[in-house]
Image (cartoon, rainbow, N blue to C red; front, side, top):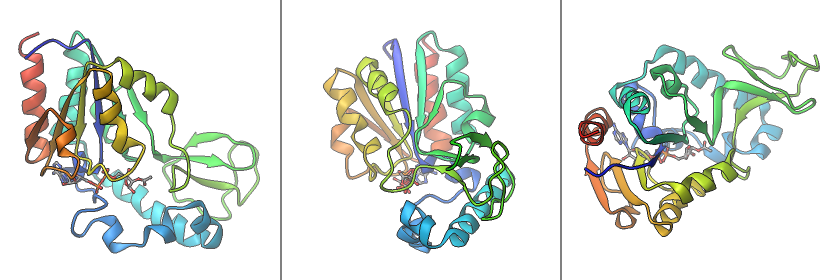
Amino acid sequence: MAFYNNIVFLTGAGISAESGLDTFRDKGGLWAKYDLMELATPEAFLRKPDLVHEFYNARRKQVKKVLPNEAHSALARMEMEYAGHITIITQNVDDLHERAGAINLMHMHGELNKIRCENCGVVCPWTDDLGRKTKCPSCGRPGELRPHIVWFGEVPFYLEAIGIMLRECDLFVSIGTSGSVYPAAGFVQTARAFGAKTVELNMEPTAGKDVFDEGHYGRATEIVPEFVNTLTNLH
Ligand code: OAD
């Protein structure tokens, strides 16, 4: 395989599925069990803050119980070993990439293990339950903390930096994402328009598969290490 100077990996819930975390849109996924409009919008948080806190508290607890898998590890290993520049953009709010050792990582949809104060704006690490009465560790006000998660209707993080990465990369690899949520779903088109080779690694071909030059299908714990090996063995 050719050498690439700049590789962007975009990851989604499928990369964490075999660690034991639910995806969103698969059969039995989170948005099949719960109504996303009741849980993942700023309006839902205004209407029913306890319900929203409960949902994210449960997910925070679940993430503590699981471990990174071979797919997360393969990407982290690649970051260490590959001579080119690697960036991981993840839509996932779990911390499995960083626990596997990833460093150059952008959580564009936020992080379960961080909270934000709507009063003072501070963002800080948080691994416990969060509730309406929890006081901000920085300004001390109760009732102003929210999960540091990008909800529907909000603008994802790092978009400017991501735009630069997409224009500069020569290989764009989408892993375990259905490509249903924009702007992430459109990243492949941008990378392609600026000349990158585009690859999809997923359990099955997605609706947007035709935008990719190449696709490899199967479990992330198998196809991601395999793909990483083909890139690293030659360099
Ligand atoms: P989805 O649930 O939409 O898609 C997960 C994809 O992973 C599907 O295409 C599956 O086929 C694939 N998949 C499942 N198990 C897999 C495995 N073991 N190996 C490889 N692939 C597997 O999740 P996302 O695309 O990540 O946003 O969803 C995007 C965004 O929608 C999320 O970040 C979240 C959600 O609403 C916010 O919360 C803002």
